Structures are given as structure tokens and as C-alpha cells.
Length: 182
Image (cartoon, rainbow, N blue to C red; front, side, top):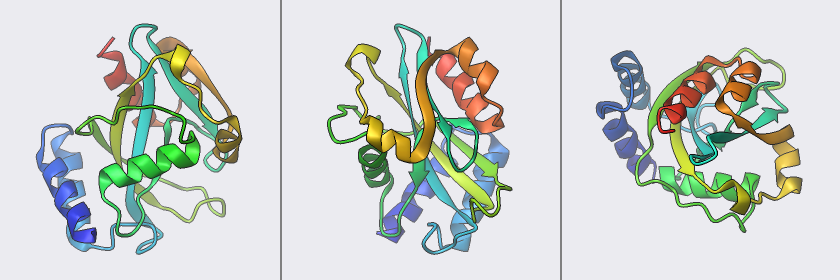
């Protein structure tokens, strides 16, 4: 399955969903191998699934416990996992099985985050694949107990409200991309 992940990442890096520099860095990292946190605890690939309601022009964000930052949901890709499998598993882990979200066919953004948060996180760099998930806020009921394992709090925010809380450049970039769909 690691070969499938590698193939998926190469295709994404060669697509037009990211800046050329990010794409080149993705390709270089893929060629190094050991793509998951299990294989390389310092630099590895992750998925974000960013829920937003386009009619209300709101996003679902959480104040992440480990990083201390306001972020979208997501997590590390496990060894022998393909992208969609990672997204489905992370949705179940963080939101619960009762969440009915249609996962987009393709991700919409690639980013790279440098991390300096020892001892809370051993990670030094995340290579992130973003899936933007259109949902209806009034039908979006994540499992609060699951969210509490990852976040101090979560809430729906307008784009402007989110921009006041978010300081992470990659999350701000994600907000910008989502905002362009409103």
C-alpha cells in the first residue's frame, strides 16, 4: 500500500493544486521514502479535512491541544494507508461514524508546515494534503467526546472570525482557498 500512497503523492505534486516550490518539495520528500509517521517520526505526510458550510460562509475549526493553534481537523497518514483511507479513518477518529461527509474525489491544496513544539510533538515537518468538505452546519454533529481528545474547543466561525484566531500560515492559506468558494 505504501507504493499506492507514493503514486498518489507524485500525481498530486505534479498537479496544479499547489505552488511550484511546494510541489517540488513534495516530490523530493516522496523520493526520500519513509512517508508516514510510523516510518519517519520527524517528517511525514498528513491529511486535513476542512469542513465548511458554503451557504453560511462558515468553517469548523478547533483549538488543537498539542499545537496550541486553531486548526482544521486532520492527522497523520498511517503506514500502508492510501489518502482516502487516511481521511476516512481520521474522520472516524475525530468526528465519529455518524458524520455523513462526502469526501471529495481529489484534494484541493498542498502545504508544508515546519513544527517546533518539543516535547509535545516529535514532528519537525508535515507535508499536508487538504480535502475541503462541503457540509451543512445544521446537519453536522460530530462526537464531542472524540473532539475533546484533540481540541480544547471547536466551533463554527465566519471567515473573518477565523482569521482573528488563526496564526498558522498554512491554515490561513486554507481559509483563503475556502473563502474563494463562497
